[in-house]
Length: 113
Image (cartoon, rainbow, N blue to C red):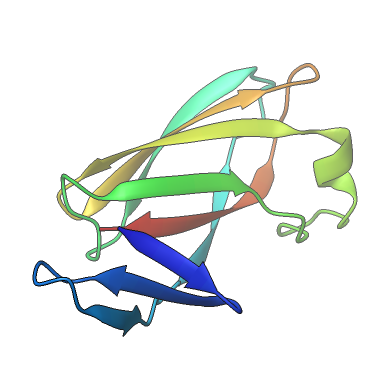
């Protein structure tokens, strides 16, 4: 069982004792290229040695400007993304939410164990 107090995370051992957990969170940014022909969805393979077949992945579109783009373009072209882990890789499925997209966009993902 997990407990949170004053922004700190605690867990209970099998013997009932409580210990403080030190969560580690790493966010990785990746730039995905949707190409020059407009598409409404596309899948990508992202190679990452830290990913295992049982990893839990969260991914979302970054607000940072991709190569050749303005920072506010993620507001104009929102893209939903989901991730499926594999050994040393992540399959990312992206779907444009407001019409078709072209070019590069940045995404942030986190790996949970």
